[in-house]
Image (cartoon, rainbow, N blue to C red; front, side, top):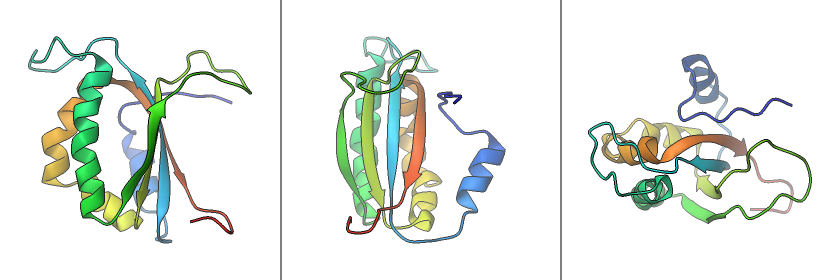
Length: 139
């Protein structure tokens, strides 16, 4: 299995994701790897770690998710790996619930997201975003 972190999806991957059939609420699993030091394009906030820069993004995106009827279900540090093997363990995991693919798309393309995305870019070394659907008996 190939595992490759990225900060942004390649255009063809984004197009495939956003053109998927609408099938209601989903939870996005975010596996996050932070830069040791934040790297802002304008050189600002050089005193922040990558995790601190991403936390600024996280505060803003939580408000956006709530405004569209979603919620942050969980956010925490990765502490160990019990099964499997990866070259480099992720630093954190976050679970974000969205009411629909259309709502997620609208948020991702919004001006509000554009105003906070620089914190995400400054703090992230890479990530995996995994869209999931609840199984029978789970919400």
